[in-house]
Picture 1 (cartoon, rainbow, N blue to C red):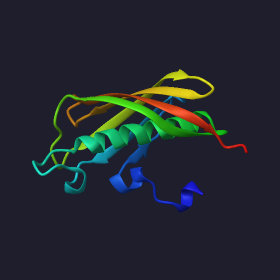
Picture 2 (spheres, one colour):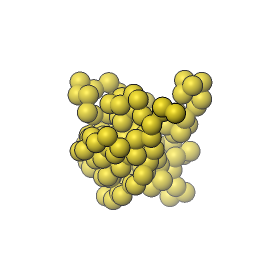
Picture 3 (cartoon, rainbow, N blue to C red):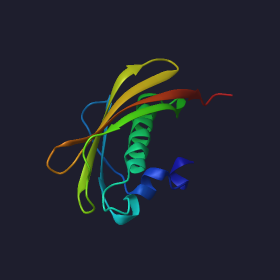
Length: 129
């Protein structure tokens, strides 16, 4: 079903990147006018959406019998990213429990500067009825 529906990450322009670690997820995103604020920098909501989507993708890869639902996101925006740059987001799992997964998600600009850091908690919703 997920293949039939466009999800928010696709709408934003997230491009998944293969990682060798099973407890890590990564993506890139070109900062366009569509995901920016009027001042010409990536919108803070874009960073939050990337973080929650990437943590969800990571949780889905680790646990195929449950569906991740974002429970909590805390974040700090550290450095503005202008339109035209491509960001890299890296999610690493901190806790993989039966009902919750906790991820750290960092976003870097093209120079490797940390621009955003967040903690995402997913509730793992059972797909069994």
